[in-house]
Amino acid sequence: MSSLLVANGILFSAGAMIDGDAVGIRDGRIVATGTRREVRTILGTVDDEVDARGGLVTPGFVDAHIHLGGGAVDALRCDLAGADSLAEIDRRVRAFAAGSTASWIVGGGWDPTLFPHGGPTAAHLDELVPDRPALFLDADHHGAWVNSAALRAAGIDADTPDPFDGRIERSTDGTPSGALREGAMQLVSPLVPPSATADVARALRTIARDVVAAGITGWQEAALGLYAGYPDFSDAYRELSTTGNLVGRATGAIWVPRDLTADTIDAFVADCVERARANTTAGFPTRTAKLMLDGIIETRTAHVCTPYPDGSHGLAYFEPAVVQKLVPALNAAGISVHVHALADAAVRDALDGFAAVPADVRAGVRNHIAHLELVTPSDVPRFAELGVTANCQPYWACRNDLVRDVTLPLLGKERADSLYPFADLRAAGATLAMGSDWPVSTYDPWLGIHVAVTRRPPGEPDAEPLGAAQALPLGVALDAYTRGSADLLGLGSGTLTPGASADLAIADRDPFTGPADGIHETRNAATIVGGELFGG
Image 1 (cartoon, rainbow, N blue to C red):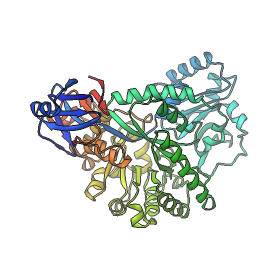
Image 2 (image 1 turned 180 degrees about the vertical axis):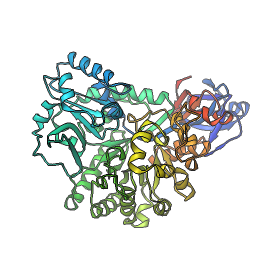
Image 3 (image 1 turned 180 degrees about the horizontal axis):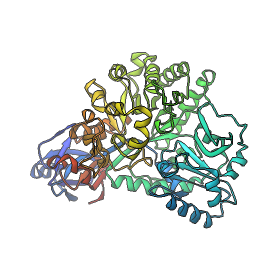
Image 4 (image 1 turned 60 degrees about the horizontal axis):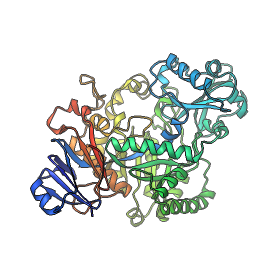
């Protein structure tokens, strides 16, 4: 039997401070909280002790929507994340291509605001990679930049129609420009040679350790399936789980293919159940399916009720009738449904799908909708009515460059106060969970919590907040990122309750005592997963 004492901390659990300054852990579980003397007496022998140095001690953060697998594959490719100029993008692509003998040059993470108004072009990428096909996903992973060799390899030309779930951007003469949106990426990405499972597993193991170091003790891999040139990460997770090399608690969501029809739902559900069983048996619990209903506002692919300036309503990837048949079938099979819905029309389609499930069946699963940038006010109360968790990505809920320059001009600046309606959802009784959508944005939970509380970008205290009325109290945001997400994913209780799994995050300060504009300065000092200490 092993024991660990965490002392000299400020304790937060289940939305409130709790009495005491210490947590006692034995054999991977919390046995007591209270004063250091009280907890030490209960523990008896103390094998190890951690001094929290007055920092906030919380349940471990649980990221309810993250793409660690995607980040692992990106690490094996040409990484454009963080490039702050077009010249830097060009430098990285040239250098990677010069050092690679691969038949395709693949990468991603580029910032779309760095390109001219028309977006990236094949001609530009031809100059950087002239000798073989190249494909680079954008930072949101909703669009791709390809060169002429990739277009030729896929047989895409002026006569190629747009797929039902995507768009081929075109020059004025109708020829493909080199930018592919949403499902149009699938015209090219299946041609990309796959990464070896062993390589993905090694990269995933490294990234998981980095995520745990940030205080995240559990997460949901948000898409397990073949899409946009990525493999099904289940293979890598199973390899790490069976060998005991995965740090942290992971669960996954099985991708619902876009070509699903009403006639193929039963076969997909049966396959989903079997894949979930195989993953869970291997130590990678998989209880959820991922249903992506629309794209993103910035490319006019999010499905909106009020049209964009060009008169379009975005893209709906599944007919409502299919959603209303698929969701009940998955729930009846014991599979929860995790929906990607950015805009109000997609959110409504998702809620209508959940409404088609009998109440007693809904009660046995954990359905949720992620992103929720735009929700029609009349739909807000339906989350609580249908038992649907609001899976929020709070880091986006501020007036960053993309929101100011692209999002609000497309939606209308008068709608700024209604975006990401976290406070309205909470007031209407919805359960909140939180996640990052990394690598689209940072996985550091304190940065996301900062935005949830201030509605301002970290480090910009004088910025105009994005819908100040939708801000959350610090305790509410922290509870959503710990207990809310843990309960949603079935990864422990997300509390410091005796008997709970000993998954803790120890911050370097108590952010409740400082100004809200300084929350982003909080750093994770140590993490405990199942009683095992990382850092500190």
